Length: 147
Image (cartoon, rainbow, N blue to C red; front, side):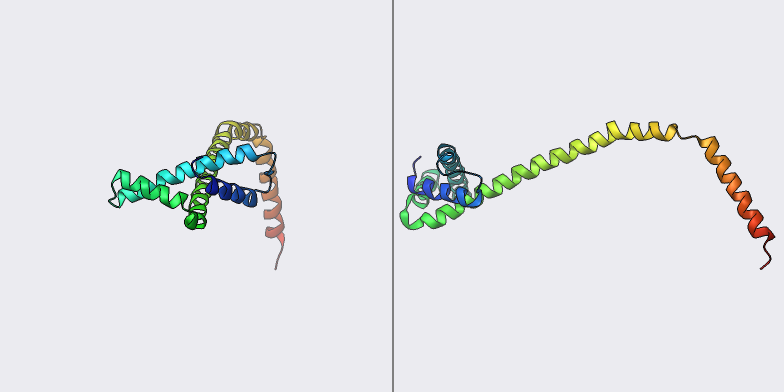
């Protein structure tokens, strides 16, 4: 990547935030992810500067200065990693929403017919006879009791 110091710091933050990663075994993957996160953050930073009125060349120069200056390393690391965490959370929310939609559709198309099938198999005539008998017993009991 263009910013080796920043890549090292973002990689370190990945290792801190996600303990399942192994510094040695996942080094290549984490460096690649760090470079991708830095590239996305650089694009976002430049786009923000352009939206605030900076020319494209000036925005790119200021972005390189922000991401590549040793004095700005802490701020750049925080900026890059905060954007990356937000992106990961948004991705997770999108996937979560898709799973919830799938569960709703499964309820509608799979479980509802099963429930209707169960309800249609309930012996309604027998239930009516039990209710009628219970009703007569209660009427007889309360009708004959003199309180």
